[in-house]
Amino acid sequence: MLLARVVGNIWATQKIPVHADQKIMVCVPVDLKGKSEGDTFLAIDRAQAGIGDVVLISQEGKCCNMLIGREWAACNSAILGIVDLIETEEGSTQFA
Image (tube, rainbow, N blue to C red; front, side, top):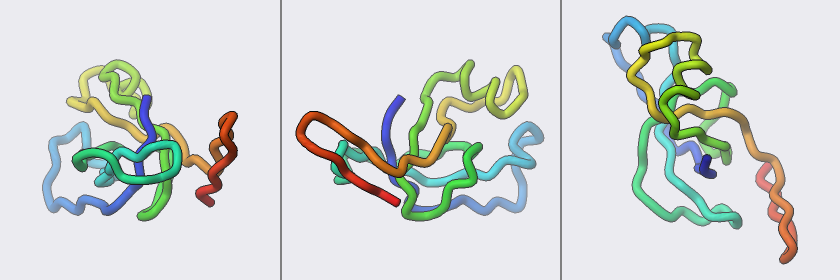
């Protein structure tokens, strides 16, 4: 699992059938303070996230397939939830 910020969405006039009813978002990994630290990637959104949201992402294929309810969905990144607050020993960071 990793933290990421949603930076965009993908609009496609045609998708493979298993992705036809799925919302696909562009995400960038972030650290615990919300600072970007990596390259963008695509993730299927199951949490109704929007641009600017910090989200929790699973990058394990079977978990992603289970989330979207299909056994073979050609998916390896899925947004599981929207993160509002992170608390650590050093303090907390609020995102929402």
